[in-house]
Image 1 (cartoon, rainbow over the protein chains, first blue to last red):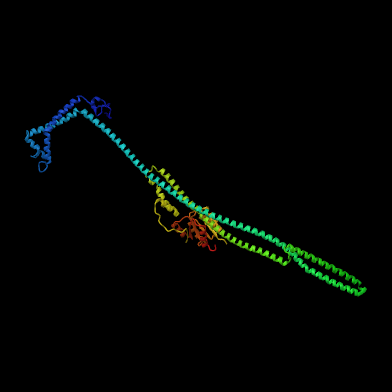
Image 2: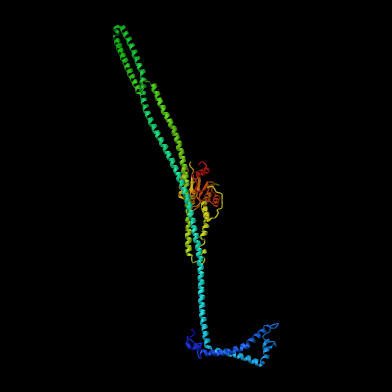
Length: 471
Length: 124
């Protein structure tokens, strides 16, 4: 036992001589506990005897009288003494009369008081000791109660914090799940964008392949045309060379032919001159001696005429020889300008025919090349159209990039607000909210379809709009 | 006389692809990187026969550019086509209210684009 008042050192301690801390002997002071207990037991027995024999029946009667158990109605406390039916009143008349009853009653009361006094005095140390124990235990109990309350409060606080942590964990788990879903959705958006871009790339490649095919065909046509023209050029050149030769010979022939009349003229002149010479000789002879000089002149003229005739003959021979040679050179035994010209015309016609033929081929080629160019232009235009996918892809990737940036910011905010009392309010909008906000930011039907497919939402069926609308 | 077309787009790829396609088909092409640059070119005296503009651009978007261009003298009836990735009806209606002549959603085939331009530009 302990006493926080003075620990036995203070003489003014309220426990006084009964203090058991300073004097442990006071715990069980003299006389011995047994004698004191015996004294208390005797007093108690006496009182108990009186009480049992007299008091209990009396008490029972009194209670019966008060509550009216044996009468139609209950009685008041005052009537316990005055009422003729009251047990006390009856008791007065039964045992030894009013005085004996009063004495008995008073004696009992006195014995009871003495008992109480005896108990109070004899068992005072035990009483005090018990009181101390009681108070000490009460203090301990209070302390324990305080500790218990404190611990209970702490536990409650911990429970509260645990609940809060569980709640936050739940919210974080929801956010993590939403983040996983969001990342999957963004992945699907990227996949769809890449798929569209792949098909556009393939379309561009196809267009460029077609352009390459057309170009190759153009090159082939041009090469064939060039070969044809080379051959034609060679043939024309050869024919031209031959024709030039023919023309040269024909020129010579023509010149020669032009000379022939001249030769005839010369012959004629020579003949006439000879006639004149003969006439002159005849006249000279007629003239006699006066005509001798004239005869000489006539003779000379005759000689000149013979020379001229001979020269003309020689020229004619030479011309004929040259003509024969030219005819041989022209490749025909029958010399004649008409045949050679006909051959020349025939060859020129042949050249013209070949040119016409090649002109038709050239026209076909030109048309084919033009057609090929138009086709190539069309394919190239289509390729340029398909390349627009790059801009569409760029914007879709930018949208995903923006979403991921928002997600990153969201997680930073989440990490800073983990200890916030209301986590959801601190991180609003939540990831689920952001996913729903993304719907409003989509610019293409493909994005909306991917989102709807992923989330399971039904897309409102709207009529497909053409991608070209003029207002 | 070849017709002139002004292309307004912040994407270099779009500018180059449209320019190549249109020049191959005999048009003269002028480019601008955003609505503000295009508007300054118009104010400086450029007189295109047709304008093709994107919608989502920095500095000045396509819708705002169309509204400002329509307010300039001499450009009230100029054909202005929007070539954009936006397929929402609300955006399309906004463009129509701003004064766009047509709404084209990317990607548009090269031949289709040329056909639309020839329909809008007489003599092209």
